[in-house]
Length: 170
Image (cartoon, rainbow, N blue to C red; front, top):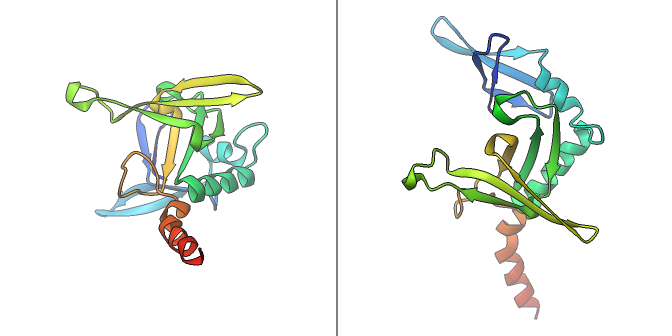
């Protein structure tokens, strides 16, 4: 995952590699004209990834993220407190089948392809609908050659083979 975080002076610092599984964060440093990855051992992002929120551990979050990617090709992390370039305080995993994207009209002057995310679910008979700003959502996806906005799941990739096998057995 490539992220950009501001340092203590408000200047952006690009961290080119975040290995969530190993809990390692690296930043790119130029030494003698060569780019070198230097591990960052302490950072608020690493603390946040240790415990996503009050009920979700790192292990649970990574398992759920992988399951979402395998089943739908998408995983959506809500970065609570992460709007307007602020440091997120919690990360919540949202169900990808309940999420839709609002696309911006770049031809009409929109600065982003995705102008927002819309989450809609029914919980205990009550419709819950929340609109998120693009900077509040981290959309992790498996590249999809048919759709640049949504991911491509393992299940979707196997669907044709499964359908052929099913028809053959009939």
